[in-house]
Length: 292
Image (cartoon, rainbow, N blue to C red; front, side, top):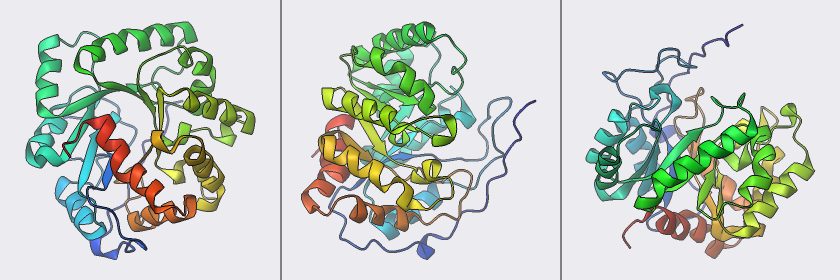
C-alpha cells in the first residue's frame, strides 16, 4: 500500500520564534534548509503536498534569529529538477551555497553551471534506494563521488539509519568528504541500537565523515528534545570540527515548529562558546567554501 501523502501545516510568523539565548556569532550558517515556490514542477508522487515555505518567509526568520549564511538543500519534492535551487542561489548571492540532486546522466556542462551558481555538493537520496542490494548502493556512491570530485564537492546522504548502519564498513574505506543528515537518522523504531551509533562515531573519528546536528525532532519522535541530547553531545565531543548545524526549515511537515528553540539546543549540547562558533561558522565555511 502506498504511503499516505502528508499535508504540511502553515508556517509560523518569523517574529513568534524564540529569540536565541546566546549571541550568534557573525556569519552563523544554517547548513540545511529548503524553499518551495509556486511555478516549479514537483515529482510525480511527492510524499507531501505543497508546503508553506517561501524564500521570503525563510529570510524573515533568518533576520529575526540572526542567521547570515545558509545552504539550500534540494528537497525530494522537486527531485532532480534543480531550477528553483539555482534560481534561489541567484537571489541570495555570496551568502548562500546549495546541494543538488542529479541523475547519473547529468552532463559535465550542467555540473559546471551549477558550480558557478554556488552548488557545492550532491545529495544522494538513499531513502529511495533503501531496497537496493548494499553492493549496488556502494557502487552508486562511488560513481557519484567521481562526478563530484572534479569540482571539489562533497557527497551528502539523505538516508534511513539502517542503511547508514549497513554502509559503515564500506564508508570507513571512503577517503572523500561525505555528510550524513540528521545525526545519522538512527531511529530506535527501525531497530537501531547504541552500538550502531558508536560505530557511527567511529566513522566520524576517521576524518572524512561530517554529521549534521539537524532535525532532532525526526529522531525524538515526540519524546522531547532531551531524548537526543546524548547523541548531539557525543557527536560534538567526538569531532566538533566535523559537526554542522542546520534548521531543517520549514520543518516538514510541521511549519509551526520554533526555529529559535532549535538554535537554543546548542546551549544544551555544548557549554563552550568556541565550540559553538566552530560548528556555526568555521566548519561550514571550510566545507562549503564561503569567503571569509
